[in-house]
Length: 107
Image 1: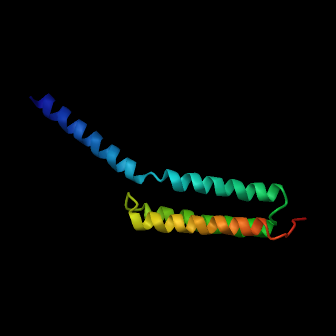
Image 2 (image 1 turned 180 degrees about the vertical axis):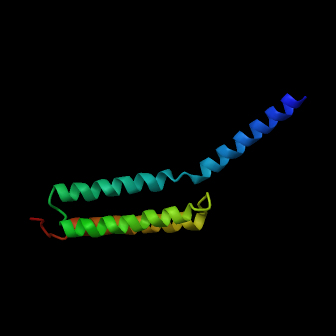
Image 3 (image 1 turned 60 degrees about the horizontal axis):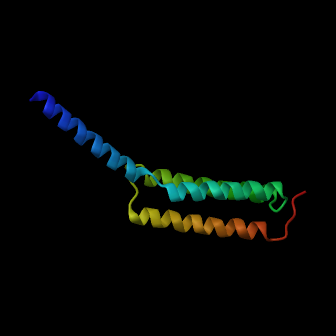
């Protein structure tokens, strides 16, 4: 009888932890952050971005990562936090595009 109770509690515990883990993942934001970092690096390699521009873009990307960590501090990200981060990532994407196409050439 005790084995059945302990087994049931174990299954319930595993189910709760998997639900909590699923809520802490942000695959869309992670993937977009990775792609934007690649775009910045590619811009530096192809002399589309100056070092100063790349530094500023990376610093802004760091602020977004910090915001994501703050949003995840309680273990899950609510809808408003997710929308805010996506908005910031979209703004960052526009900033990268504009910096790469502003006709400044790195030396």
